[in-house]
Image 1 (cartoon, one colour):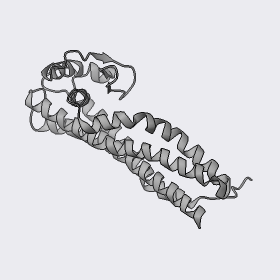
Image 2 (image 1 turned 180 degrees about the horizontal axis):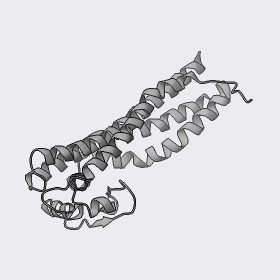
Image 3 (image 1 turned 90 degrees about the vertical axis):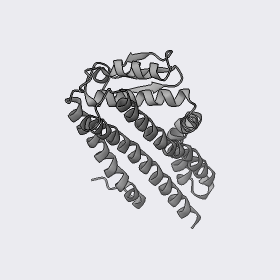
Length: 233
């Protein structure tokens, strides 16, 4: 039987974030499915609500498109297109309207040059490459002993961009949800009370996944710093 010759105890640091991530995924799936079965009294589809809210914000040039997949809904700031999954695009449920309005909130952020969104967009390239290169560079440096400290430091710097991206994502997502609920209620697409509360639960569950991702990124960074500190001892 093969027995690993080395066990990294710092993996234990990631356990809380892993548990939170698993819970968040289960929560968002169960909440979304629950309110996907609750029809909004307005009878409007997610696509119709998204179009109406975009027009309300004078975003006439932003098209609403259907995109394959489950929970693949997003707003693309590069192409200025709002894309909804089939169950949201065609759906008339509280979940569908909540998600559609949330993505419209991102479109409104983009049009109004919401600072956290601009910051997230600016650091995205560095975050994308940083998250893919950081760990290979860091652990190659770890294997080289004291001669690899430069690679370890470079890996930490690159991963810091990925952490910053996750941290900045939180206000972007929370603000989009706040805008969504406000628009849905003020425009009468959801009734005040149970319908708004249902949509809020869907968006709150989705926000939990971003909290979990941020917690994981922060703990990973702390773990790398801890391992780097061991090298100096």
